[in-house]
Amino acid sequence: MTTEETDEHPQFYFCDCFTTDNFFLEDYSLHVRFVSEQQFRLDYEALLRRLGCVTDPQFEDVLNKISQEVDRRRRLDATSAERAAAIKDVYQPLHPHVYHLQESYLAPKFKQLVEYCRSSDASVEGLLDSLEEEAAGRVYRFPMFEKSFCEELVEELEHFEKSSAPKGRPNTMNHYGILLNELGFDEGFVTPLRERYLRPLTSLLYPDCGGRCLDSHKAFVVKYDMNEDLDLSYHYDNAEVTLNVSLGKNFTEGNLYFGDMKQVPLSETECSEVEHRVSEGLLHRGQHMHGALPISSGQRWNLIIWMRASQERNKLCPMCNKRPTLVEGEGFADGFTKHSATLNPSCVLT
Image (tube, rainbow, N blue to C red; front, side, top):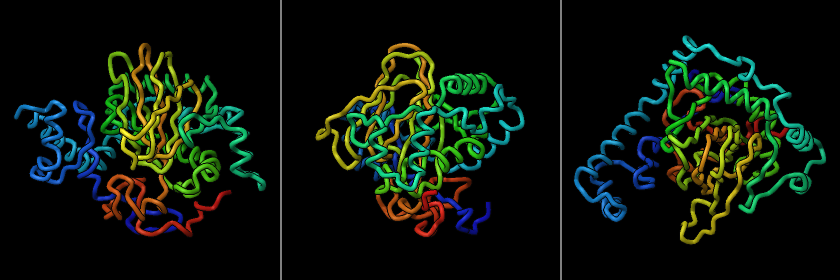
């Protein structure tokens, strides 16, 4: 992609906070910012000691992990492109058809919801009459995929997991999972799913946080297993709107829990649990704080799509809460563009 930007094919960017903000220290369930060791010690040393980081070797271990993550983020585009090329070269899909979205994969109820949202008399009130709203505010549930498709998709993901092809980590909080753009799902599956099916819903449900103008995404699959990741700490997403679909397999417990928006301290928040049901999707605002409780048996795969609206994030980066300073990236990067997307045709519901 060239550095020139057009309405049809914008160049996407990272905010420069990508290499300084939101490092997750798993041992202490803490997100931190790192600009320099001096700044880090001033901001976090006392807090880390209260959380159990009391010896010099423990603190050095924290610094080493942050240094490794900074280096990973700086090399992210290049290493991701290398992995994608290697996967394309060496990996033979088990179910090639799942890489291309077909209407037969979608649950009838979901297609009915989308059809209603596309109609000339659609309203948020009418849509809410057909949606299951959870106890957590503005979290919505609906049937998403046919169970037979979920089974085939999980089989494909397991087949890839067992292959010799290189694999990237979805984010700093999930150790086990798959980046779907590297596996080749973006163009034929995730982008049309976002543009043709999800945006009609988000346009009505989340107009105040970019739901009408979702123009990029980051899509990945996470896996929870008794011998791997069991749960996910309380956090918010780098997204305007998030879709979370339970793909399977057999598991018990592991519900999501939602608090308030990120500006509200946890001490002032009452959390609500939301059950995962295989083949069903949950839509929520990206800045809505949430986490995943531990599974107690089995294995769970979840499809996560962080949907982004450059029109919103160009004004304020959701990760550092400042006007973004842009760093060029490949593909969708982190969803920033150089210009407002106000007049972008993608903001018009069709």
